[in-house]
Image 1 (spheres, helix red, strand yellow):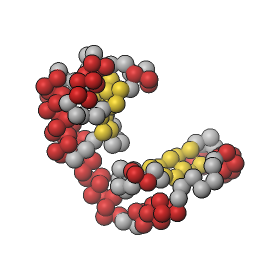
Image 2: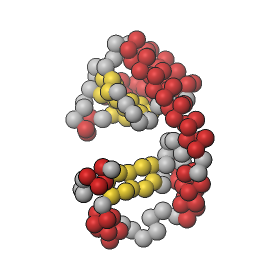
Image 3: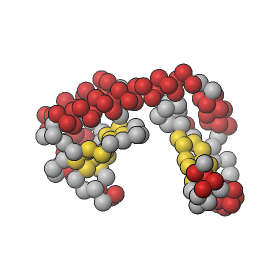
Length: 153
């Protein structure tokens, strides 16, 4: 209904997390026909290969996998949010597959986590110099991140 209300809106969807197709770099967008026509004029031809397209179509049919992915992501989100609360760290509530959290000396924490083998992303380029972003992982991955963060801070 938003597309009917807002003619300048583009809704995009990735198949990375919930559909388990991150390596294929496939997704789709829905918008007003005029915007889609413009985008089709400027996009490169064959920007998604046929294997990725077939995988995306198959993924759309696998409701059970998507439901399980949502449950796992929600559990991981709750696990990380609980850890941030325990550590008295502010975080931005999320509906996605990552959480941004606030730490003192974010660049140094980023480097220390990297040295510990834990990859997070700085978000200073989004005018959030005191925040880092962590992807929500499996329980064991989240535990590894939490333990490293507890040790570092």
